[in-house]
Image (cartoon, rainbow, N blue to C red):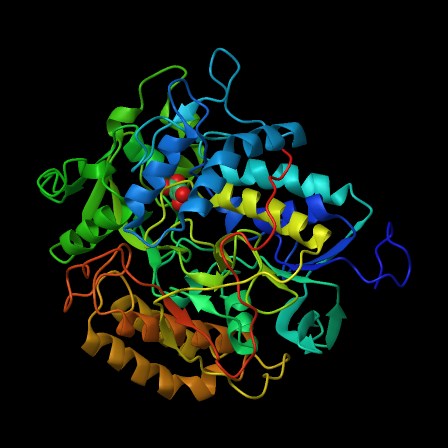
Amino acid sequence: MSGPGRTPGALPRALIVGSGIAGLTAALELGHCTVVTKTTLGEGSSRWAQGGLAAAIGPGDSTADHAEDTRAVSSGLTVDEIVDMVTGDAPGRIRWLQHLGTGFDLAEDGTPALGREAGHRSRRIVHAGGDATGAAVMGALVAAVRARPDIEVVENHRAVDLVRADGRIVGVTVAGPDGHVRALTAAAVVLATGGIGRVFARTTNPAEATGDGLAMALRAGAPIRDPEFVQFHPTALDGALDPLPLLTEALRGDGARLIDAAGRRYLTGQHPDAELAPRDVVARANWAAQQHGAIFLDARHLDTGPGATFTERFPTVFAACMAAGIDPRREPIPVTPAQHYHVGGIMTDGWGRAGLPGLYACGEVASIGLHGANRLASNSLVEGLVLGGRVAASIADAPSTPRLRQPGAHRIRPEIPADPPDPGAPDDATAVQHLRATMWRHGGLVRDADGLTGALDTLDGLRPTLDTGITGRNLAAVAALVLRAALAREESRGGHHRADHPTSLPGPGSHTVVQDTDVPHRPLQPFGVHERQVAS
Ligand code: SIN
């Protein structure tokens, strides 16, 4: 295939699977590439992000402080160079987005207005359109990609599996809207497919977040790191919607409070930062409180008049609440924790290089070592920007043999199913719902060995049915990955809480690496052999 601006017959420099913030950034910075997306350009989780982009650009703030906050919330397992690199590059990426035309909310002096979120010592969250940040950023990226003749966009095509030749990943099989499967090839493949939220019954993630890239990488034998670390957001709007509307952490940053049905603030006795404690702490407190009755976010006092009305500050939240019949200016909002972000993922170095030659990953699907066991709020869009740029630089420079090592890791072999399903076969909705409910109950905020083992048994029973559809097969693979890694980690750390092992093991913690030892993989280290900063 060739795009209008590419030499006919020339192999694309890369096939980028996924069109969120990381994938489109990689495409813009690399050029001469193909973006494959299962819906249309810009759909997916990035567009729904309310909280913004964390960057140390405020007076008195520093990238070192941002890095320290990232590490403090992580519960260990971060890679120091990666944390320093991403937080250090974040301010430049904000400027880059401004050059692309993203209209961030501005303070009176014309610089970006800065919000506060849990775990950040200062106001350093950049927003656009109040709580519509993702939509604004994605609007700018999509327009920039559409204006580039050297970037071909293949929409409404589902990636099925990675294609390997001569020991390298050289392409992807894709299923078109008619179910016809064909192979697309390129000099490199970048997985930027986002998260796994649809594995859980309660999630803020859109329908696209079915773990496709993670499952594909797993089947191909790429090392996957720490898949048990799943982040649950403390506050989604409780109800029957799927996905559940997010109630941004910026509400609590501005003073909204969590209360039970009696109006009692239950966080104050549990953590010195109360509602602004790290996200895993607040999410688990909400889960525990919810076992005794409904819980609410009281944001009534945030509607403080002209220039700062609720509708001006939180238009997305306001619309979601009103659609559910709740006026957040007049009544507390019923809330529930919900799956929000996958912290683990395809193991990569600081250039997005995965453990198989020719394969790269960036954004939520990747595990680069930024988040450790628990992600700091508003670090993910920034990660997507920084790593998208570094993947592009890495592919453009075609660096020589990187090395990957994860000393002291606990290794598990993946399960590799044999045959791909018929792409025309529908997914079994009942089996998918059963899987999602099981994962929410036993693979969610509070886990234990009995629940995890029972969930794996349930999954075994569902697997023959799930494996007949492309989505079901991916959801099943990802669910098994999370459950098996959660069972193997006999401690509580960050987003992974085991009721039967409620404390962290002493020391800095060890990683879980899932990989097929029969598949030769290339060794990596955080930065590989070649180091340079991405121009911003
Ligand atoms: C939020 O707005 O609360 C979400 C921000 C994030 O997940 O980083």
